[in-house]
Length: 516
Image (cartoon, rainbow, N blue to C red; front, side, top):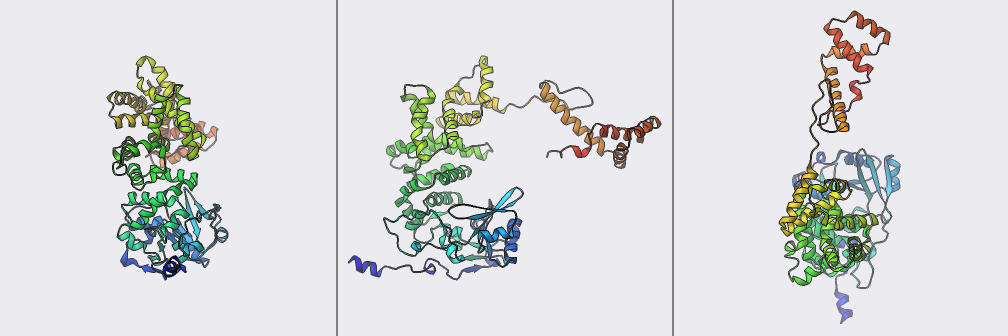
């Protein structure tokens, strides 16, 4: 019977069987709102140059997806049939990076544009998933066709190509329709895709929450089925993905999605173990948990333009474990926290500098409850610590989440000290230094105002200022003669001002532009 059932099962024999549109369905200008002037001009230059040398090249991935969703893309990636070595021969300002799959970074002032080559589809993607087979990608440097590259990607919404030559979108996998229908779908067999690259499960939840998409049923079922595969994922890639999540302003919602799909049973499992056992509806009520409340407050502070570092988010996640360790362990602060968190750090392969930082953050929490004025010198010394801001934000968020009035008042005390502005300094008006701000501070402000004063004087009078600069370039002897001859005239005084500026080395070009 098993032989007969396998015989009549649909088998995938070629890449065309995976694609919704094997020949590539084109959507022209009348079907979408993307135009070439919305694309980064340097990315467009790269595509035109590759076209000039006879290669195909398109904008691909998140840039196309975000524009179709009405969002501003973070960056634009280019895909081409030119190999990395061929790209390097065309562009001098580039470098080849990557082990698993080589890509090219083309460097511009202040940004990097990533250019990749069409990848081929592994043979196992053309068959049914086998339970015991290891599909994890370890090396992937085989190049292929646009069709294979589209079939090889993670989700349909990320597999659209935009052709800048005619403003058309090329769709091989049905991604255009999925974006219109707000659906997130894996390309091909999700049982293979998630075992091939487990990080895709985390990315699926992230995209669904950020972009407002619904995860397709087969994809959602596969996430729950293969969540344990996340333990095989590269720690560096996972840390990179976490840091991206922490910058979204929606960390709490993404973690709620992770809880609903069972991912938190694998990721940060120690931090959520008690909550999962205590609450059968852990996923639905995640935002009511201690960690959920803290993450929601952090997201709110981000929207208010507060700075939130990854260390703050990690501390909010592991804060309960650190508190429990201090209550249980009969030892000093740092050893107790270290003993509690070390197994987690080891499993997550946390870098040593990050471990040390987190331990310092947890060990300093009780310090914020001390607000006596007589300890002002100790408080000032504490503020100078490099981890002070992170530790303070963790304390403040924890106080708000627990609605602890005493801790909130303590946080208010320290927040005033964090927000304290320098003492105002009078503007330079020809004499005297800054008042009340300390010798160094007053001197710096004085120099800054003097620079503005000199700039304004050089700008006054149009041609007179230029005449003064030209006059300032003459010899010292000529300047002395002109001073004697022009001791009473207004124009001559402006010349003297220009010469005085020049003799001090205070030309306008020696100053930075005014800050806006």
